[in-house]
Length: 293
Image (tube, rainbow, N blue to C red; front, side, top):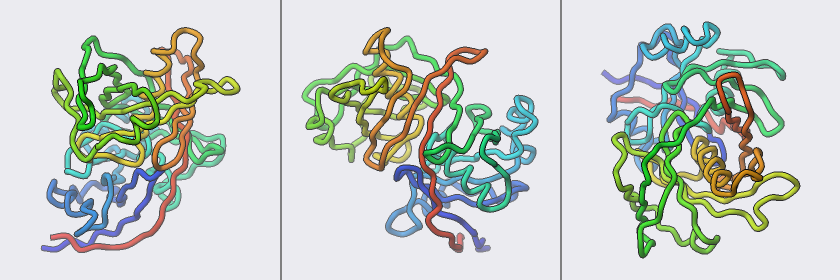
């Protein structure tokens, strides 16, 4: 039987999503349905699908409510290939815009909206750039991965960073090398992470630091999607990697330029260790409905 899906289309710096409300958790899409929705030729087209479901009505939401009873809403996120992702830094800003625009939640300036994700509860606030997300803590892996991209003559060393989902960051020499990357092909990571990883290719700005703020450019290949115009968690991982390579005097605030725009990443201390915040725009561009088999 066909199902009519009422949806909104939104993006954060070009990283685009299909969002729909399913408060009671009764409409769980199949892998094939997600793939059809995200297909840019035969569907709506998007990098992923976000289902707005109350935390009490989805199994992973139980952990969110234990962590923060105020996390009423859970971000049920799927990559374009139908695979489940732990978190999405751009997606959660667009999700917050969807919740507030739809009247499902309220968020005044100065207030915090806790949102459940598979990577834990994330606190969202309004900011001058749109929305600011506390991305929580982070950690690096002990491995020393090598990354091969189609335009590389030899494999390049990468730095593994987990910010709720896994990333491998690779430094390139200049803008020309970054622009020449062919990310129509999946970069090869050795050793291959068990659950895969997003791969960020980063170039430091010249100069690297201006007025106390670091500047970098980035392109990304997202697992389960391909190259996207932006990746929120990826920009955070890229800023952390460049700060690590730059040394102790590197700043804790970074502007990250991606093909879809620019976001701001900031590192700050909290009770449980160093946290990361991500600030950037979120826009809903149209609403619609589609019939799904």
